[in-house]
Length: 444
Image 1 (cartoon, helix red, strand yellow):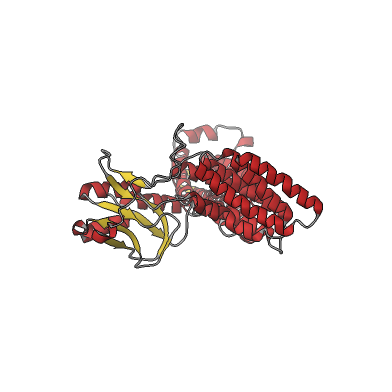
Image 2: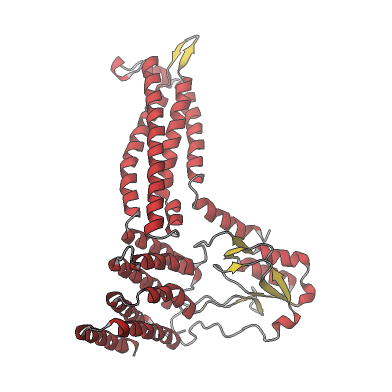
C-alpha cells in the first residue's frame, strides 16, 4: 500500500532513537541463548566437562554462588550505567542544547552497553534456576557457566569503553563533529549531485512552476492533526498523481509545523479529488510531535547553531566553541554549494508532465537557518565576527553560480556591519579591512 512506506521510514527512525529496542532484542537473545546452552549441557558435552580435572570443574554450591554474584553485579553496574546516562543527558542538554539528546539516544555504543548488561543479568538468572537436584544427580550446566563468565568479562571491558565514550559526549568539539557527520549524510540524501556543466541553471527550479490559476480548479488537502512534517514521500505522491491523473502541489516540507486544519497540499483538477485520494496524500506526509533529521537539513543546522548560541551566551562565554560551531556550519553550507538544490518538480515516470510541484527550498533560507541567529548573538564580539567573515570568504571561493555568490555576499555584508560596530581599535579596523579585501578578492 502506498501509505505504508513513509510510516515505515518514520517508525524506523523512532526505533533507532530509542533506548529500549536494541536492549529489548538483546534480552530476547539472552533468553534464546540460555535455552540453547542448557540443551547443549544436557547432551554429550556434559560428559566432556565431567572428565576434566577438578581444578577446572565447579560444584553445585559454587555454581549457584558464582551465578548469583554475576547476576547481582550486573544489575548493580546496569544501574550505574543508567545513572551515568541520565547525568550526561542533563549536562548535554544544558551545555549543548536539547537537540543533541536525540543523537545521544541514537548512539549504538550506549544502546549495546545497556542491553548487554541487562541481557547478562537475565541470562545468569535463567542459568541459576537450572542448577538443581535431579534423580540422576546434581545438574550443573558447565557450558552455560562458561558463557556467563565470558559475558561478564565482555561487560566489564565495555564498562571502561562506555565511560570513555560518555566523557567524549559532553565535549562540544566531539558533539559538533558527530552532528556534522549526520548533517553531511542528510545533505547527501536530500540534495542531488551536481552535474558538471550545469552551473548556469543554478537549481532555481523556476521551470515548470505551478500555474497562477492553479488554485482556481484545485481541492485543498488539510491536515487532520497538528505536528511537525517529519518526512514527505515523493515517490508515493508521484504514484498517486499518475494513478489518479491529477497534479499535486505540496505546500510544506520537512520541518514545517502544521496547525490543523491547515493546508498541506492542493490537487488539480478538483473534480477527481475524492476523500480516498485526499487521505492517500495525507498518508504520504508524515506528521509527528518533534522535528527529526530524516529529511530536515535545517534541523541539523539549528542543532549546531544552538551550540554556537550557548557558547556566545554570557553564562558560558566560550568563543572558541562558537568558532568551532561556525566552522561546522561553513562545512555544511560548502557541501550544499557543491550540490544542486532539490528539484521543485517531480515529473511522471514517462516524463510527459509534472506530477508533483514540491515546496521550494532556497539557498537564502538555508543560510538564514544556519547563520541568522549566530549573527544576532555575535554582535559586539570582534573575534567571532572575523571568524564569520573568514568562513564566508571560504564559501565565496566555492560558490559556482551568480545566485550563490549573491547570497554569500549578502551575508558577508552582515558580518562586515557587525565588525563595524565593534572595531573601535585602529588595529582591529586594519584587521577588518584586510579580511574584507580578502573576501572581495575571493568573491570576484
